[in-house]
Image (cartoon, rainbow, N blue to C red; front, side, top):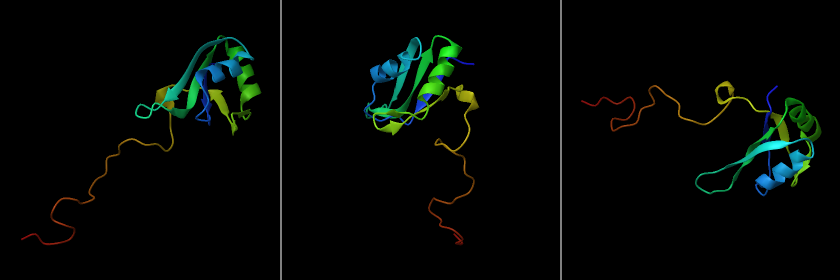
Length: 110
């Protein structure tokens, strides 16, 4: 098991220190990263906590997943590498067709 944990559904008021304190009760925290929006500099509502051992990471998951932190039920799970992510998401998509331009749809231009 990986020692790095994903923590989701965080209140925008939660700080890295809050995360560190909550997880330190379940083992040694080696790193805490709260994800921040580049433009607003505000929390994005999720972060990552790295525990010193896999056993401590599992203990933190068992103890904290679904518990209340700053008024929200947080989600705690093993962090997955970026390449494994699936599901709905943003990003750019290649669409074929779709029109646009000056000619309009279905009109004879000549």
